[in-house]
Image (cartoon, rainbow, N blue to C red):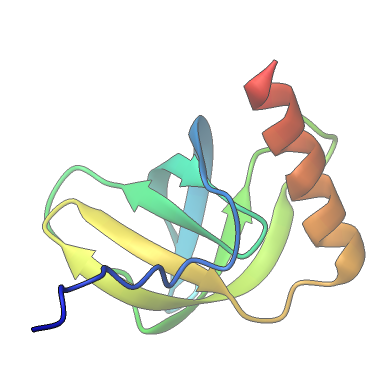
Length: 106
């Protein structure tokens, strides 16, 4: 009998974070907190149990002059937590996220 091996679906290392974020729904920003961050996605927390839309725009406050704005897809939602996968990030955007992840590890 084969033992069950959990499948890791994340595209990269995900680190704990505490980053403000906004998810836009019908043009209106809804506040979230990023609790885990990777170059390919994020786990978000929001008071309440409303899931973000399946495809959305998310803004991340990464200690820079302007928020990093990316398109994302909701891959799971469970009450106040949800997982997003970034779907159209440019390489320079992913580099900025990677630099922020490096700062969180220090």
